[in-house]
Image (tube, rainbow, N blue to C red; front, side):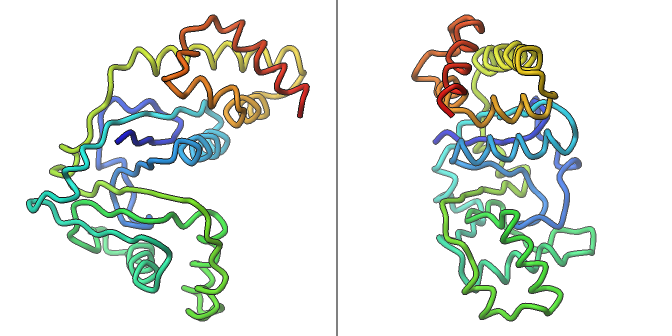
Length: 225
């Protein structure tokens, strides 16, 4: 299965020392099977750090989910058990992982839901109110929590990623010049466009096109917005 990690950094290797506690499923390396979700995360992180969004692609060996040597936890939806586990990890101030799972999979506490989690932790929202206010929408994340679990991840050859990145660099610069917008706006326009979605889909082979042709596709799309 193809999975994606959205950030502002090209992932050359995974360093758990750069992974923070206090996340939904604790310290670990997070990916999603939803490419659009990874793009949104990359854009958000890049805006915050004033860098370029980068989506890294990995192959996930799903045999790991049935491997008896790995301890797994799976949440199919937003449930009481999911909430308890997220709270356990978000409240963890010990400096050590709050659980002993190798892989945890389940839905994401996005910005809106994370705010509700904070209200729940503060006591201003009851469990019943929290569960009622959850917005059910497609979301997905897998957290690889141990070095052993990372054996299930492999990164494809980087030529395609590099080609997509190079196209983006040219397109963003052109957007800034032609539309008189700042870099953050240009990044947002490009990485949330249908044009970028087509480039990121390797089966289209659009990443092999000259960046000028991609730019023409994007400007045509922008005219229709």
